[in-house]
Image (cartoon, rainbow, N blue to C red; front, top):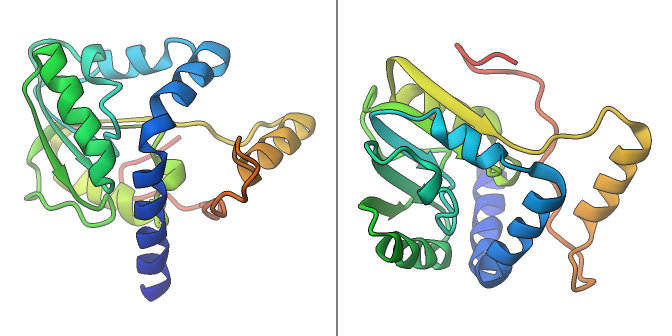
Length: 188
């Protein structure tokens, strides 16, 4: 628990610093690697929606207009950008700082829980997935979109090299360990 807490605090500091360059970097990766996957994933949401690791709010304009959107993120700096984005889009979004590993919501509160490109930065993925399923209403939809290790050995080597070094040449935070288990109700 202490190790997870220390890693969470490091990620908090990291994402606060990263907030100013995040959108530019993600737009590049979306053009080159991810395509319209973000738009497709968010279009599947309905009803009361929780976005975990909402970041700068890049998904806001991809959600259907009739959803009631709540976003949570570890980084205050990311949330500041998300608030400005929501305002600029005329989108009502409830945003709050919080930890995906201990969501501050009642059980069965949301029809949809979404997390796009955020699981890779959560120290205890299993706990976060348990929390996401806990806050889902019965029959609710869990939408997960993330990059994963390639099945190609060469591509996996490139991914590891990229993950170890940031674009400014400094050492990045270590990647979270791979996880084999899945919470109840979550399957590949």
